[in-house]
Each structure stands twice: as structure tokens, then as C-alpha cells.
Length: 127
Image (cartoon, rainbow, N blue to C red):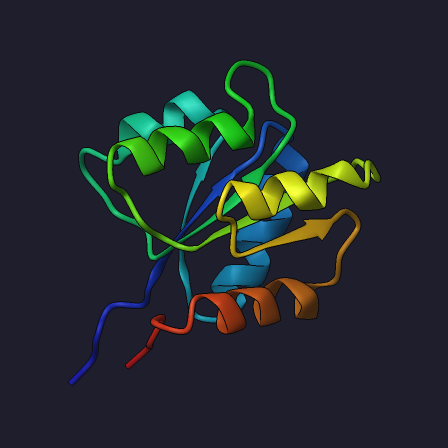
């Protein structure tokens, strides 16, 4: 029996980053939904629920932290892997406070991303 591959949401305002992350995740047998903004992603939650969210911290409109807070307020509990190009040391503390699964700093490797999903999204199973 074939089961549907887990859905990962990628939320990043940079199109090349969404494309690259989507390719990496699809090659690892995940389904991917990509979003250019936090608002677009939050609106999608009415029709689909990812098992993990890859969430950029710095975006126009809602920041990744604001998206995470809105998910928590709506009692949507899925692992969140924050990504950022910033080297601000305070972001790691803020990610922990936001109850993120982890924080990856760009550029990160495909292996680092997949390991973060496997480690922090341990409920992700593929058939």
C-alpha cells in the first residue's frame, strides 16, 4: 500500500530559495507547498496542513516569528525550522522563545536541512 508523502511548507520571500528548497525536499520524497509570504501561508492552512514548516525569519509583511506566533495562537502545532541569512546572535534565542524546532543560517547544506527535518519532525513518516 502506498501512502502519501508528508507535506512540507516552504515560506520564503525569495523565489530562488523557494525553488532550491522545493527541489531538495522533493528529491527526499516530500511533497512541497511554497509560499512567498507569511500571509499567503497562513491563508493556506484552511485547506492543507503541513507536517513541518520551513520558515524564513525576515520577510516583508509578517516576519517568520509573527507567523509562528499566529500559528500558536490558532493552536496549529507543527515543527518549524526557521531559516535566516542574518548572523545576529539574538536570533537563536528568539527562535527558542518562539518554540521553533531549530534555526538554520543561510547558506546551509541540503544535508543540514534534511537532518533538521528528520531530527525535529520525528513524527514524519513515509510509506
